[in-house]
Image (cartoon, rainbow, N blue to C red; front, top):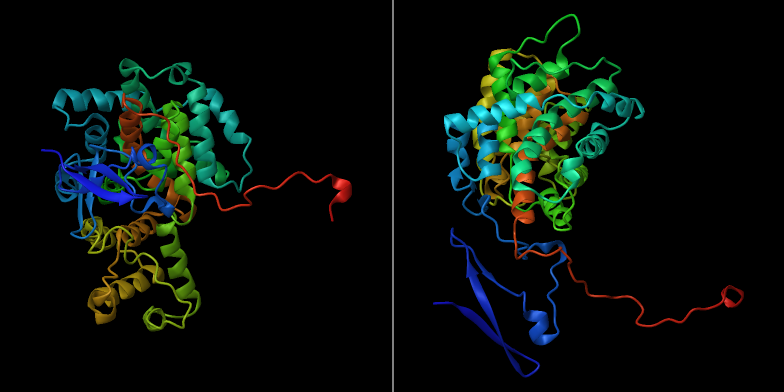
Length: 429
């Protein structure tokens, strides 16, 4: 039996349906509110607004739950790989061995970008941010595949999605090499997804990068843990652009631009910048912890707490273990990593942080891992974008295949001048 919420507005009874998700989340469907009443709702930042119904990712921030297609992130992190998880998100189910083999083959077949795209890289200044290059080159890559600009076709979508997922790491690696004035390194079919990215990043024409298993596993886990995270800023942007029936490449390029913002994808970069500042001040982290607890201080603890998770970030529990294993295996001596350990210990044991649930989040540990691997800070958000690509592709597909969907078009509450008449320039002033 359907449930409704009823209320009186301007002397008129308004009746709106209640929708319940499969995980128990409840929402009031206000899609007919304006038609019934002439009113709209105002929700700055969409913090209380459900923009869509989705079958991809479920989050319960109060309980610290994250599931892809219903599967707990803990199980995927332990038993799956990034490529298998990408298939799960993009296709809605875990692949069979035949499906996974075919998908991996598609990634290998599409890992090379069109050779003419090399000239596009030359047009960027040497100090161009890799995210700017990534967004531009994803769009450019679509131009070399005219079929991606045509109407959505399920038969060709799988190939286009595999091409995008595969080429994004090639573009990212080329962007990095360009920023350092280094020759481009082409992918090798014998390497799997994450290993191939490390190869393209760090190999030289005369010497292949040593692919240590613990490094490859750590990067693969970072990709997996970032593969989707419900309707965040960049994913909502992808859906917004997709609703206009723009191509997959154009929509995800827009997602890259949204992710680039420091309030969204720059959190792990902010962690390293914080650690560098602490080190420059000659502190081991203890003075910074004291300052962070002082309301009058400007010290801001980055990489702790989360807007969505009011409990421990479930991804942080997973990645902490891999972070500890990696640092132990590499035996790296780095003062910034020592400071990070001191901050972590304080946050996990100090009552001030425990009471406020300011636990280290996934950005804290991913930043440490990437520094240990040797990935430069300006590439941190790019790594995030590569990992998030399966989620963007899945959300694009869900949007474009929604027959009841229409172009996204939020309303507003106008607060400007109600009516002002034009004044000739001779009479202004």
